[in-house]
Image 1: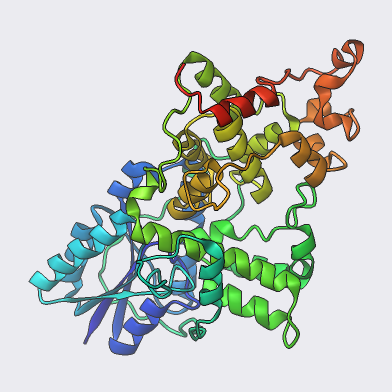
Image 2 (image 1 turned 90 degrees about the vertical axis):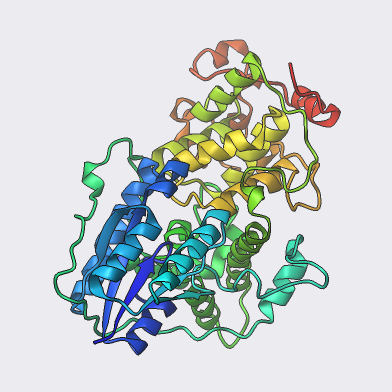
Length: 461
C-alpha cells in the first residue's frame, strides 16, 4: 500500500487541486494535512479575522473530504517537524504541496525537502496552484521578474491555460492517523462583526452568483463605493478556497464567444494578483523594505502618531476616508477604491511610513495577503512598481467621483447621514450653526499642507 501526504497551505479546496490529484494518481492512500504553523502565526498571521475565516475553511475542507470517504488531519507546531513526524507515522512514500512565493515559504520548502530526502521520501512542489501563472513562468529579457504591470499582463494573457482538474470522487485515508481538533470560529474573540463566511462551498457559490449577476457590469461599476460591485472573492483567493485559474476560465467562458469588457476587467484584476506574487517571489525583502528607495524621511513624532491613530479609528475629518476605515473594522474587508484612497491619505497626505498602514491592514483584513497587501501599499506610497510614484489621491475629489450621492459615507459615517451630497464630502464648509448639528471632527490636516509635506519631503519632526 503506497501512501502520500498532501500538505495544504494557501490552497484549502478540493476542486482544481493539482497536488491532491497527483497524490491520488500515484498512491493508494492519501493523508490530507494542514499544519497550524507556529512560525506563520508568530509572523502576524494569527489575526482574529483570518483565524475565524481559516476555521470556516478547514471545517468545510474536512466536510468535503468526509463526503468522499476521507478526512482532514490537523497538526500544530513547526511545519517541517510535523510533516516529517506524520510521514514516519504513516510510512508515506511522497509528499505533495503547492509552491509558495514568500521568502518564508521558499525556506520552508527547502527545509522540508532536505528533511524528507534524509528519510528517502520525495517532495513534489506544484506550481500554478495559488496563482494562475507560476512566478517564474513569465519573464522579461534580462530580468528575473516584471517590474511594470502592463507588459506583464500582455505576456501573461498569452500563456496557454492550464487544464482545470476536477475534485476527486473519493479519498482514502489510512486508519489510525491522529488529528488535533478543528478550530471553531465561535471560540475566537475580536472578530469583526460583519466578517464573511469562509470555505470552498461559499467560494464556489459566490463565484457562480458573481458570474451571473456582477460580471457584465464590473467594468463600469467596480469603483462605485456604494454600489459594492466588486466580486468580494479576495478572501477566498487568499485562502485558496477558490482556484484563480478556474476563476479566469469561468469568467471568460461566461461571456464566450464574444469578449466582454467586464470579464476582461475582472481577469485583469486577477492578473494584478499574479503580478504582485511574481514581484515578491523575486524580491522577498519587499515585504518589509522599499522596492524602490524613493522616500527616506517619513514623518515621525507625537503629531504623526496622533494623526495615524485618527486614521485607524476613522476620524480624520475626511468622510470617505473615515467611511472606508470603518468598513475595514466592521467587515475585515475594504472596497478596493477605499484601500487606494486610505493608503494614499496615510502615506501622501499624512506622510506616514507605508509599513505602519500595511501592518494595520494585516491586523484586520481577512484577505491579508503578504504579496498583495505589501506591494499594493508600496504602489500607492510611491516606493513600489507604480510608474507615477508622485500621484496623490485627493479624498474630496475621490468621494465626489466614486460616491457622488454620499451613500457610502452615509452607511459608514452615520453621524453625517442627515447631510446630503455633495456637502457630505466637505462638512467643514458648512456654516458654523449647521456644523454644530453634526458630531463629526474637523479635518486633522489641510489637504494643501499635506501635499506640501509630500512634495517637499519633510519627514522627521
